[in-house]
Length: 278
Length: 241
Image (tube, rainbow over all chains, first blue to last red):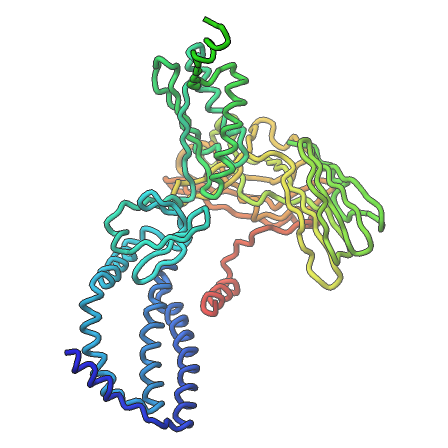
């Protein structure tokens, strides 16, 4: 087979002295072709894929650009006087070899198509996959790229995505942020609930409707277990996260309720002995 | 409702090298200028912002505006509107302060747009397809008592076959103009008609009454309109990108 490939490649008849006219023609076709392909792909996507999500439109555009680029390449080679018959013969054999070697790639492409048909996320969504969270930066044929919040770029193969749990954090316009806390035994449950219910009104970025979720979890040996859930618009995550801490302290302080925290005191006996303390 | 001073609205009278201070509710706006460069900063109860510079400006106008989102009115107690009855009230809404830079031959540009009072943010509708809004408490037995807000004349008409309980209503103030009439801030009248057994509502935004036509000082933020020209424009924009 190798001999056959070598023979085919040798048969590609690139003239030793390519006329300048042919080279120029090839160059012009290349430049014009690339521009035309890109414009046509963009216009086709805009006209035909109107109702699709931006990720799907981008993928279709890329596929059209790849197909168009191959056609332009054939035209360029033809204009430059390269014998296409021999080249295609060689490409056929090489293609089989590449096909066998690129099973994973094909699997990724098929997985990518499944993911797109599910429409679970789009460009710009914040997702968590395998413990990694970030903004969907690009959706390609073989993989997606996720930009993390500490500004790193992660490439996740489509095949891996299809088999993992994906959490789309920003799918809906509003979210709820939950806080668990333990309050001092001395506090009444009613006072604690009222204090926690007042928290969203103290934070500018928090939503007052839907109302905050307040749940009394029970009496434990540490104190009253309480849970607070505050609704917010998805873009206000940091403002709400920081604001709730301050508002919680203020609301509980006004209601004279202490938050129970675990304190560990370490006593070093050796140091006390050295000081003469028994 | 915070006290505003309508005398403060209008062209900011500042001579070159001088500084002026305008008070709108709890917000104090300090403005100064040098020839065509203007400076402003906001001073409120808790904060002082840095000076901001606007270059190439001939004049500055301070004007009232409606909030940038719809306002949900929640009566302190539900009101029942009987069949075929009409419930009218005047709703006062705290205005926002806009600072507008003016330049000869150019359209005015808003350089500052802030509320004068703390707004209560809420979500109106479902958690999937709703929209953000502000919530304003409303006393149905003492409506329109504050002379300092922008007054909206609201009519609720119950044309449904059963009694209507008015518990909350979204008023799209961002689709209303702000005007002045007899030194009072007013807006377009709004009529909400409830029809059918499902009590589906239709909202009509009226124009200012003839004869007592106020001067529009701040045009609406959002122009709803489904007219043919707008639709054609949107279509062309989508096509050409």
